[in-house]
Image 1 (cartoon, rainbow, N blue to C red):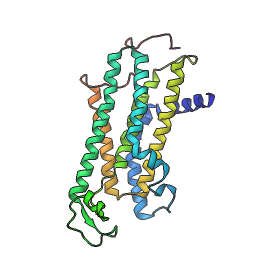
Image 2 (image 1 turned 180 degrees about the vertical axis):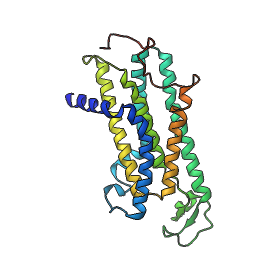
Image 3 (image 1 turned 90 degrees about the vertical axis):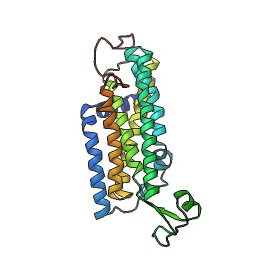
Image 4 (image 1 turned 30 degrees about the horizontal axis):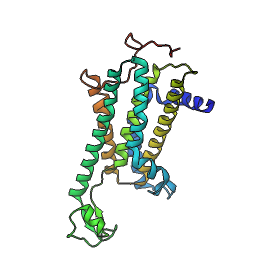
Length: 262
């Protein structure tokens, strides 16, 4: 458990900083531009992570929203209830996960529609042999063809949105103080390590996407959608009274003062 404690302490000192929440969006956008430029001007040699079937892509990135949702659910519930002691406020804050799910669903549907309406079916990835008889991606792939359209990077969108959402929700750790001997401390510490590790996976795979996949405009569009999803919620809507609100971050009288706090 000491190793987990040290890891959690490191993550608290890095991801929970205000500066991280302020500069991470700019860092992601800059990485998209730099990585795209590198891919066009001086492509990196093939590696394990340039293969779409690498383990992180297959078992983590393709399920990025599911991983983020399943870990944030208990984290938000436990930390917010620990601080406020009000189930209603916890449910209100958990609504952020439904909002995130809606953003994920709508954006991926938009990306799919754009690829469909801008695409055509070809016999090979070299875009040879136009097959006009197949008017949808499903028909094309089912017939052994290759569908080519404007493919907005779903990876850039989802990894951007998930990483920023986790960092925003982890800001609550500024207020969470638990007794080391209590089970709640163990659970929250474990969730901090899991969420922190997940964030670093998302950032690493984001960088891999920028240098290995898609063209520059597809990646910029994907990253822009992720940034807009984050900005529209955590920087605009969640500041309003008719919203799920931001994670508790102030040491006011509204925070529960219970026996678990130091």
